[in-house]
Length: 290
Image (tube, rainbow, N blue to C red; front, side):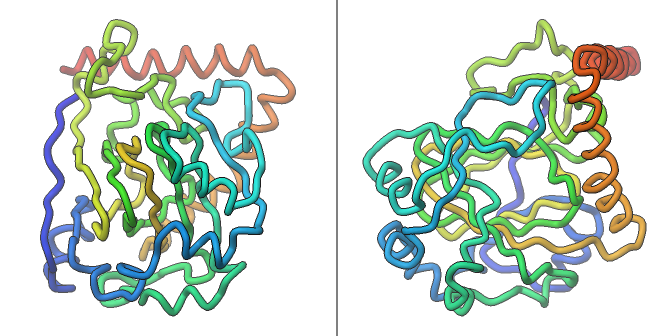
């Protein structure tokens, strides 16, 4: 992997953000954005336990999904408050993602403001909360709806690995999916380059997010996250401004995913072998071009 640090600023003007990052689809960390929000000081474990602790949520372990199962299937369910108490108690390889806490406690939305000055198209019905215990992992993927993301970390530290969408073949993307066949867990210590050599060619970014950091992830960016410490984050999603980007997101969300799910149910082994052959061939082409 050819990794660079993500540009980091305290603040940035809307004009500079648009010209230097949004228009060219380059990530950036804005450290000062969330400091303006009441949430910066207000949001902690006990606050959420009190507000929505009785809601049941799906939790996900660190096991990387295989090529036969549909994505986003929870490994277990528990009360949100019980889960947060476990997170507080120590290392826990369970995480929560895509939890719309704001549907259960609408008043919480007054704790932050939408940064409309930076970009348009925010999907304001669906701000999402992501929670992970120390040691939990979000395996590498890109978001299926192809939205731009502002991802703000609250409490704890999290290591993030990022790649532009165009690096997909070097990353061994599984056709018809948003996932990679390769396992990037603890990539900074050891990665299986023997079986996935094209990853050496992939150009990406690496950053550690801390409390209050807001990461801009452009549409389609691959991301892999590992919780150095227990923490939670909020993602604000914005649709792409162009019609082509919107249509691509709709196709992946409602076309690609449904076709993949159907094939996994009807011809799982044939479908898996076909996709593996395709991704290996695509990676080989990248190696031959190098």
